Length: 289
Image (cartoon, rainbow, N blue to C red; front, side):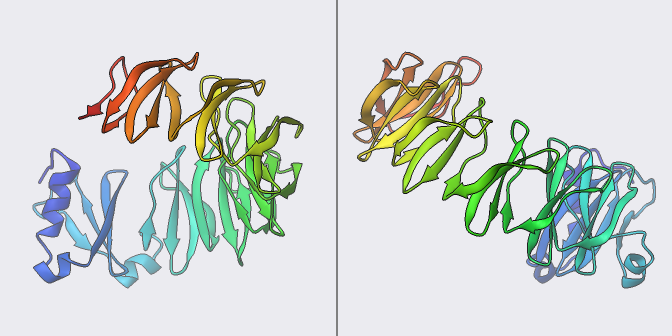
């Protein structure tokens, strides 16, 4: 039996469950030529490339113990996927080869070649060979962006590089990932921006901020939003209820309950007249009226 789509295969698999059992159906994921699913901790698998009359089968405890199958397979990212056996996670590559043994409590997706892993309540990073790049020392970590990852230790945030070195010490109340060479940081209740050397280039003076996109960042003061450039110069004054990121040279803005668009010079080129809008994509923006 061949399936044209994965949905056909999943629908076929679900036909093997009663209505009550389907209510407990949790998730499914494609894995090589298989679709793997989990229901109440029990696995099922369907080989949708198989020519068998019934390629569906439930995984038994013996299957899982044999090492052939896993309790859970997460989505692939950058060619790697976390797999779970018993209560621990390991990693496989796209050929299904086990890269690490089952030792981690949690594994997050890869970003820029490194993955976040947790063990005994602390976080570190591993590369695609399964080598530990940083030991398990952080309370919380984020994925890499522009070569840096935000990390939390003893209640404060800083940044590590891809070698695992803490290049910007954990000293901030909060931080956001780097975007266009700058990262938003929060200190003493206010937000500003640092560069990749850790130098404060835009002072902490804002109530809230958004990451830089296309050279501009939305900033909030006294309940209203405006825009600054990378030198910290105000491009629009604080007049909007909200400002979104730029896409194709335009940013959606909200004022008096309605949405419109500004350009990169801060000019309101499409008046705030819509109930909702979406960012521009391929020259068009969805609007709701």
